[in-house]
Image (cartoon, rainbow, N blue to C red):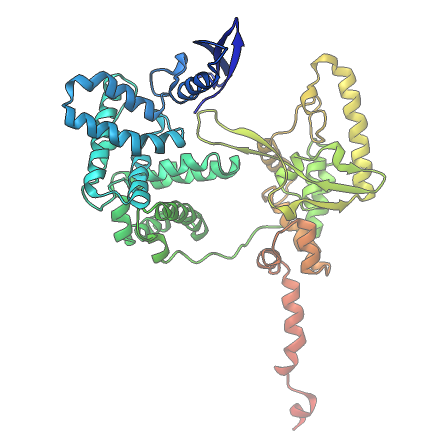
Length: 501
């Protein structure tokens, strides 16, 4: 229902309707009631209520943006003469009591209708209104012919109702169609970077594999092996078990949503055996290698980024998200509370940079001690940036003035630049190739080797769970295993008395 109110003008009531146009901007429409103000307030309020329910703004009065319930009413109005009285009575009753209340409440547009959305409506009517199969078939007939009407007018390209067979208990929605609908639903519920990951897995892996097989949700439910076969296909193609596990997470979560909507009676993903997770085995530098890296990167645009990752264990997103207000020179503290990442959400724009106030997890928001060498470097960078700003004048990019890691023109360093330039530094200086993120592992391994406890390392790195710290980093120091071996080696060595006997 649109918003609106009454206004008195020249002794008459006028209805002021507020709505969002097709361009996304708020608009108003003034409509005269023709009723004098005196003695007609209740009648005017009734007219306003009715208008708010039925008014269709001019710029969305036709086409794919028209609300579903108004499409049905327009269809009935245009085709009433071609429908016999008995059918027309049934149509009007079902629209009034079932279809209109449901779709009007959800403000569903014609362009948003899919087999999943329609099937969800049928399941709602079955569950909440205990509708018989006869009623469901009547509702399906109305929706199908109304969408055929929309198809004739060119408002939609296909009729999604025709892929549903409500005459049986079987849900005929294709698994691939449901995955795409679920993905679209999740778009507004999760972080942009998380959506990008979901989008990549679903559109680049799940859809291509299952599309030709054309399995329905019901078939997936009855044959969990189809999911197991998909995982095995990935493993046979060279994917790591951890990659397959991430794909399993998407499949299971989507099918759990289908289960909650009563589209399936159980989640088949719970019945298969997922691959065993591989233990992390990342690369890291020794203390000597890290010292050499710090030396060769002095004066490089990435000098601070390398120190922040290697000494403080910051993630790439945390390095690029560091702002000047996060540095407290007096209290000698660095606050980690902002991130900058790069991702691709598959909308044709390519890679996009995502800024976020907050970090990967709540625990990642942490305060670290500002040591003197880093303090001096930051102080010099601040003076250098002020000088670059003065020299460049109006050509200096003021947009990122609050960020620390910028180039001489004031442009913030991009995530891809850190990754690529880091590799160049290593290659040009004969250093062993590792990833930029491996500097974080290097920091952790050195802390562990220096005798820092897991709890301290967890807080320094910003892990939400100490088990993460333990699983990833405790194997990185081989010397600890040597010490353990030496501690009990005596049981293998004969004593002096045993040798003499």
